[in-house]
Amino acid sequence: AQKVTQAQTEISVVEKEDVTLDCVYETRDTTYYLFWYKQPPSGELVFLIRRNSFDEQNEISGRYSWNFQKSTSSFNFTITASQVVDSAVYFCALSEAPRTDKLIFGTGTRLQVFP
Amino acid sequence: EPEVTQTPSHQVTQMGQEVILRCVPISNHLYFYWYRQILGQKVEFLVSFYNNEISEKSEIFDDQFSVERPDGSNFTLKIRSTKLEDSAMYFCASKAEHNEQFFGPGTRLTVL
Image (cartoon, rainbow over all chains, first blue to last red; front, side, top):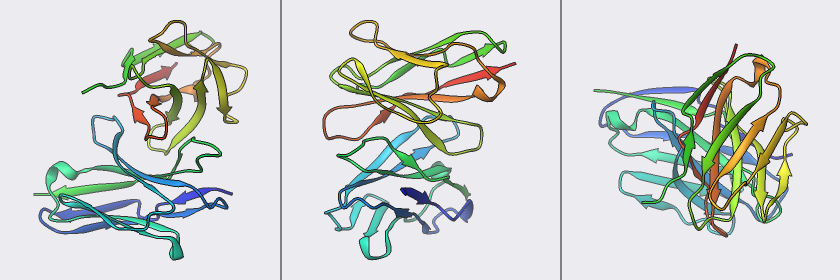
């Protein structure tokens, strides 16, 4: 059965620290997509990244980077030099597209960055 | 930048009442979704909609729920007879072909 696990419920760091948010997924499909969304205190869901199952290249976008490893079914997210504005709940999600495009979310990791 | 909009931002209703949550997806998107998030919990899929019909729905989406695209711009979620446990944040999302889903800001539904 499909599942996304974010074992870290809450992480607290001080500004400028690097932080990694873990995501482990389960699926029987060979084609799928993985996502990260950010939910700031205002409540909206902000898309950060989409990765398909055939592309294991790591991606970097500014202070954000993502490490996708099919061998361990993980799609981890690292924020380098964290800032207070990074404080939010971060959700990892799975879509078993093209069979279905519903998003299966993890339970989220609340990141608090203190000044 | 185009965005998904939702109204109202907060809806308070009495148990047993009908509510309609409204969404305006991004204009060139063809796929539409509703999700919900009970306070402090994860986001859960409710229903997907394409070509004027439901393409997939979850176990949560029972006979009390319905969706409609009444015109070329709106996408609505109706709950016929609300229950206390329907209290949640409801998110609408839309996407173009082969792309990621973009979410609206959500409607907080409070059932008293």
